[in-house]
Length: 94
Image (tube, rainbow, N blue to C red; front, side):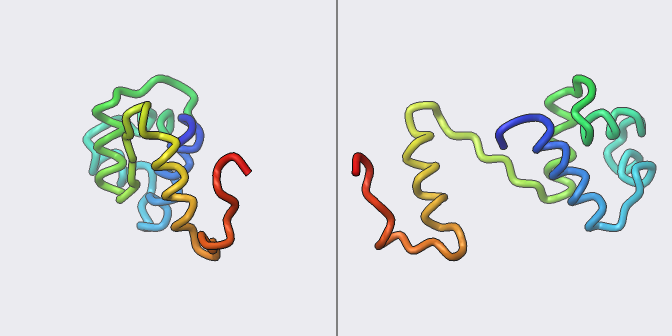
């Protein structure tokens, strides 16, 4: 995920997909409704523990890759995207 807004939007979409209200989801996570609102809207700082718990509960994947491997992983993931033909993709440096 590129930023907290994207992460929050992913949490919100997953919660809505599960047909859960903010109140129901906050009870599930054991946090205040406002905390979950802050996470979903990226308006305020939320603890990493809370963010990770929300991601786990709602099935939002977080991929952590060491800095030196990011470009290779990014390329591999881009090649796996639906509709991507890796054989016709230009090689690096072309």
